[in-house]
Every structure is written in structure tokens, then in C-alpha cells.
Amino acid sequence: MPTLLLRQGGAALRMLLVATVVLGLVYPLAVWGVARLPGLHGPAEGSVVTAADGTPAGSSLIGIDPVPADPAADPYFHTRPSASAQGVLGPGDPSTSGGSNQGGFSGTLLGQVEQRRAAIAAREGVAPGAVPADAVTASGSGVDPHISPAYADLQVARVARVTGLPEAQVRELVAATTDGRVLGFLGEPGVDVTRLNLAIARARATAGG
Image 1: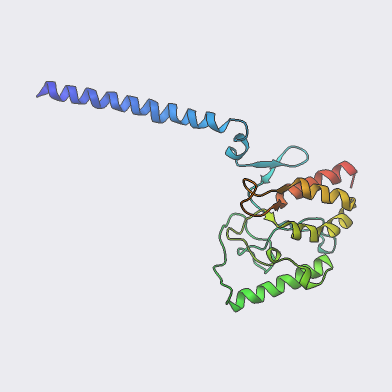
Image 2 (image 1 turned 90 degrees about the vertical axis):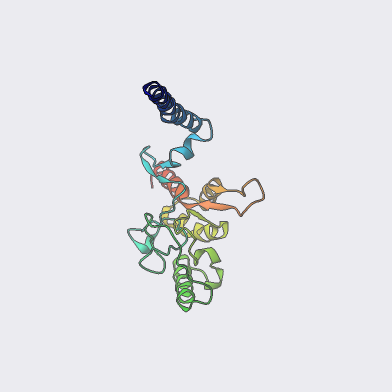
């Protein structure tokens, strides 16, 4: 009996040591190594984007709707509305993810859509009918950094006017921060507002604006 216990105890101890080495050392190191492969390092570290001075300024995967110091001179591109926003247009709370769970027959949702449409039309100086659908409807996550090229195009003239950057340059920055369809055919192109606003800030700093 003591011999059997010693044999079983020894086997259990050896299994514990092997599992500790494999699962506690080898596997984490393997995952860490894979995450450092070219093309995977950025996403593994949270897709961090930096400001002009190199300091971390957020993640390209999280949309933060900027608040201008002077609403009458708004230099930013804006994200889609968020269900976590206090007002109908924003800004939302980037620490809270989720939709409004309101459907197309919700009078509250339809009222919010109309208020957003009117506010955006006034901000951009266009007719309400020119405001695209994604500008007035929240994303499922509430923190989607992407907007449609149509919504970005709607904001180009205002951003160029307020920042003093040439409109052609602003359009180039929009194009540079536009992500295409996944695998070339899945989904729709989207403009990453987080990366775009940082690019606008860099361009302004370079121009001395």
C-alpha cells in the first residue's frame, strides 16, 4: 500500500510539474511570440494610436466623439451617435458598450433620429435630406470608430474651413484613413474617425495652425 501511494503521488507530482511548465511557461511564451509577428503586434497591444508628440491617444478600434471648445468653430470629424450619450447627438461614454435596443417602430428612436438629422444639417450647413443614415443612427457597440465615406464627405468642408487646411488635403487624409471591405468583398468601406482626427491634428501642427 505505501508503495502504491508513493507511485501515485510521484506520478501526480510529475504531472503537476509538466502542466506547470507547459501551461504556465511554454504556452504563454508561445502566445506572446505569435503576438509579436509582423502584422499582429499592433492589434495584440490594443491597436494604440498616438498623437503628434508620440504619446498614446487612444485605440483605432474605439470611437470617441470629440467635443469642440467652441461649437461654432468645430474642427473635428464626428463619429456615429452613441446610445450612452446624455444628449441625442453625443458624446457617448467610451467605457460603455451597447446599443439602445430600440426598434424601427419606437417613437423615441424616430424622434431622436429627426433631432440628430436637424442638428447635423445645421452643423454642416446642408439640407436635412443630405445627412446620411449612419450619421443619425447609433452603432450596435456604441463605440464604433468608423463612419461611412458619405458622412465623412459631408464633414470635409467644415473641417477644412475651421482648421484652415486645404479641402483637397483633408480629402486625402480621409482617403488615407478609410478601411476597405474585408477580403475585398465583405462589408462596406469605413473611415476611422479616431485615426482621421489625429491625422488632422498632425497636419495642423505641421502647417502651424
